[in-house]
Amino acid sequence: MTNSDSPIIFWFRRDLRITDNPGFHAACATGRPVVPVFLHDEGVERLGAAPKFRLGLGIAAFAAELERLGSALILRRGPALQALQSLVEEIGAGAVWWSRGYDPVSVTRDAGVKSWFKDHDVDARSFAGHLLFEPWNVKTGAGGYYKVYSPFWRAVCQQDVGPALPAPLRLAKPSHWPNSDALSSWHMDAQMNRAVPIVTRYQSPGEAAALAKLDLFISDRINDYKKNRDFPALDATSDLSEHFSLGELSPRIAWHRAQEAVRVGSAGAEHFLKELVWREFAYHLMFNSPHILDRNWRVEWDDFPWSADETNPDFVRWCRGQTGVPMVDAAMREMYVTGRMHNRARMISASYLTKHLMVHWKLGMDWFADCLTDWDPAANAMGWQWVAGSGPDAAPYFRVFNPETQAGKFDPDRAYIDRWIAQRQEHPMHTALEFFDAVPRSWGLNPGGMYLSPGVSLDSGRKRALAAYSTAFPPRPDAKLA
Image 1 (cartoon, rainbow, N blue to C red):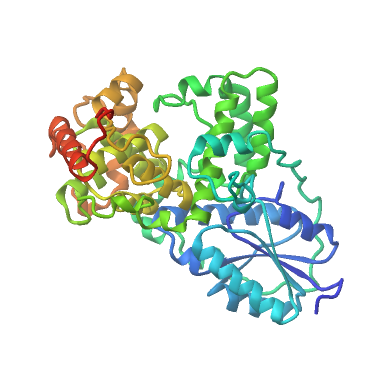
Image 2: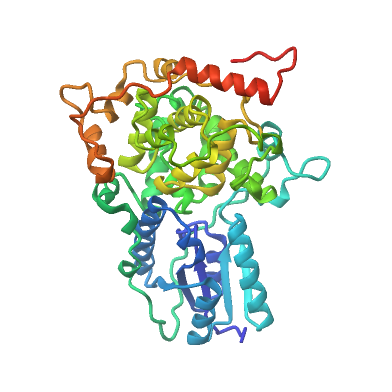
């Protein structure tokens, strides 16, 4: 079946782009017919509401781009192996190729797909493309994996990532196209309910939008990136997280553009490179220690007295942006309106949940996995465990962010807080009012309601956290509690 004329099925997943997509580039370079496919498989079934909604937008944008090239994106629903088996049979495909995934579900699924097709004389191959460095290729001097970011950065910062590959100019078509599901039949936005029209306005799906954002960032923002990136009211970040999450932008293209900025003397360019490598580090950890996704990375935290009760009133108030702590509530409300949250705000809200409120990081991680349109399995897990103290390369676990101090430093004129919190303002901004139209009606929230006082005061919450740390991890004589 693997003759030189048989079609190649290219199975797209989190690589919704045509530029610098190594596997897709290789398939097109054969000259054989290429059938692009996206599957609503077991991986998609597990997605939370906001990531699934954003994926639907990304699929629509990518399908339009393929159509512009004279091709088509075939959509099928069902377990990956069964769906691919049917497609191979229908079109007489001799090959099934794809870009690698690195989370445990993808690794297990893909290994099964590859094994079955190889046993049945179908060429099954996986390619790099989602990362700059394959996780198994970056090793310590002892041959293990890195558990601390700084040496990981030093190990990869001078490595050659290779040139970016151009987009194919044309795709050879099969003699006949297989049937495709209608994307609308998948109802990717169903769980978003009434938030759909609001959150949609803040999305920019597709490769073209990603490349345009990268151009804007390199030309207008990267020089001041390190200086301004922690101020959530400023347009100072790359705003590329949604595109990296779905592979709408090649990390290699971003790497090369940032390297060019370093060479011309841009002050913030190296820091952006370090953020790209921080993403790589998250995948390096997830691949080599997959328990980071659902268990404490440091086993000594397994008996720490976090609350894991989803009905805990403190957790419920945090989820609804009703803690009474403005910086935390602003962060949560930004997420419900835009599908994203500024990184500094993520750290503050996560610290408040896991430390002041003593709620288990996994509850917060799972809530973000349902609410973020830029959700990424590796980054989400590592970020939460880093803040909570249970993860690798964590900030001193006993450091407790004070949301008021953080607001004074990074939102001194309350521009971010006022953007997202309507209460206590005579004329709230439309962004703050949109929150009440986006959240479930069952929450019973309205802009005329009172702004609540904190259920747990910052001082008492900090003292409770430090007392728990002292009991669980008796401090060394030289340790200083923050």
